[in-house]
Image (spheres, rainbow, N blue to C red):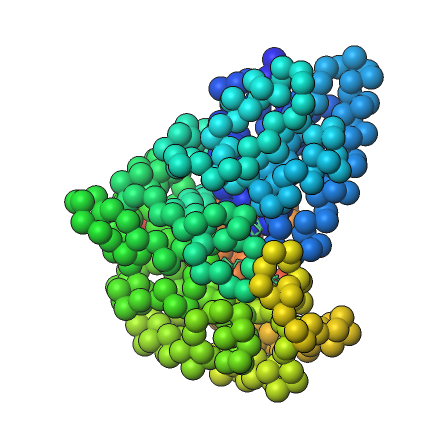
Length: 455
Ligand code: SAH
Ligand code: SF4
Ligand code: F3S
């Protein structure tokens, strides 16, 4: 009988991708995914270190797992192996083992291809396994093929780590130096996904548009070239990518937004702040004006492009005037969506010891007014789509019987009344109602690709 494996994933899409690949690595060892940690033979927490709250969650979850582990063992039901993976593991490996000695394995984002050795080592009694080095070999060269369930929309990591060292950010320390996979291995993985039924691929990297690597002909490619190449895959309908740095939006990539229909007109381009003083202190290496110019070029290339962004309020030294500049930038761009955070001091990062740490109250107030403004922009964007007609990629059943849901080209959730056979297909829809969290549509045509094929 298969051993039960439960993985809980925190943090960004790269962790979601890594968790799926951990399943691929563990499957040959007899593990199969389970719905809950109760009674599981192995539980992996794939963790995030980006803000203090995210990191602290791990220790409370570990307390709960310790009870489940004891219950399983005292019921004579065998052992529960507990593992901590991901960015907290990388940053605090030793500390985890000291605080939670019942943990059996701790490994970072770059070593999970070695899970078979780790599992063997952990099963030989005598202490926990800690593997948080940055190995010379790339995990991608050692991972088995995707085994996971087929999904209409899938993630594909193409770039790892980050060399930008924004002063608030832990990623360069938890994921290591920037690394790009070569185009041939990315293409092979994309083709396998599409052969299994995937129609949309989101290319992932912490700084994905810094991707550069060996092209299929041997020459050096940049990211725009890779996108054009992947767009040639038959059966792949939609390409997205995340997350990008404004400094790496080069002209070739901007041109791809105009030239490649499959590249969806929605771009997550974090700016963090609208104040040049704060951007400099953050080591973002661009000004607010540089950002606005990139946005202009993108919109010239692709007029229907919508943007989303990340913001941090309360960065050390942020004054009311700096914060006002952020609100000004938001009004100048008009974002369709955004994530916003109160600055969280992270151990080991330069900003953590900067002068002028902003108080909780000021941070909370700024976050509330920022989110108010961003919410208004988001609602305004959704309303521009009322009565509009566009293709929707349907992904799953809706919450109510008889409904299916999918995504607009701009990542909006679209709900329609239609049979489940629409799942996995692209259909033209008209929007009839704009709700708070989704748009309601009606289907105008069936699968666009099938129709084209018939024509
Ligand atoms: N690689 C991406 C961001 C990764 S982290 C990029 O360069 O944009 C995702 C978001 O978390 C960041 O964009 C930032 O807005 C937020 N973030 C990162 N570190 C943070 C910190 N110390 N405190 C608060 N928010 C933070
Ligand atoms: Fe962090 Fe900056 Fe790198 Fe993004 S670009 S991962 S925010 S250091
Ligand atoms: Fe978190 Fe690591 Fe992703 S810190 S945001 S899981 S890269």
